[in-house]
Length: 223
Ligand SMILES: [Zn+2]
Image 1 (cartoon, helix red, strand yellow):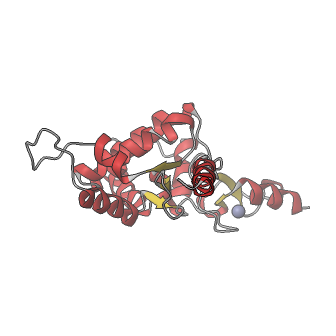
Image 2 (tube, helix red, strand yellow):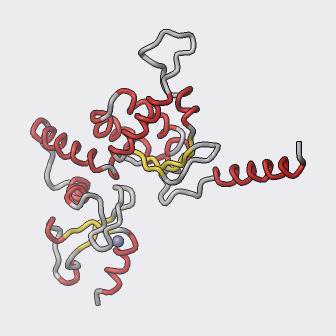
Image 3 (cartoon, helix red, strand yellow):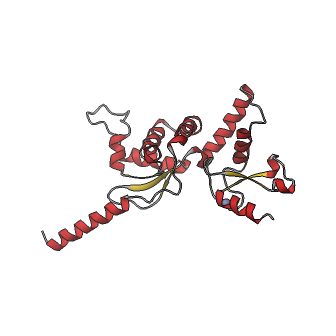
């Protein structure tokens, strides 16, 4: 073997290894937030997934957000094919699902908006970002319908502060009304259109979803 080719191989390997250490996600999740996120995956995401989609999503979730709070994960098709689920179509000793099924499932999850491809594949696989129900439009729609049903069955007091916040977030689609940034209930804040100093009240019309940056900017400019 030509030693220079050997050296190039080695360098390529090192480069690959470096690019697998994904940058810390744009948002991380803390362990305290996990129970709520898991509840919402079961309530709002799972009902709109097929059994395969759900198995893949839970696998990706478990190895990203549930592992260290980072929503990014690099994963290869061969890992997914081996690790997630067995085929229901074959009794073969090694009854892995097909590469095609893995590909279809990843594509379906991307179409739903449950995962996002962040780059082209390398030898360790493809970098994905795993999204939580707050960030997935289809989930928010499903949630709105579910909450409407639940309030009929179990009416909640309208004055609860938590409920009021959630209604504002839901109405604004978890987007900052000032800079349009997509937020989650963990990063979204409530801001006033007209501040209480200027006589603004806590009515839904006077409350908007805001990111932390715009919220700080907004309140400092009001003089
Ligand atoms: Zn903003």
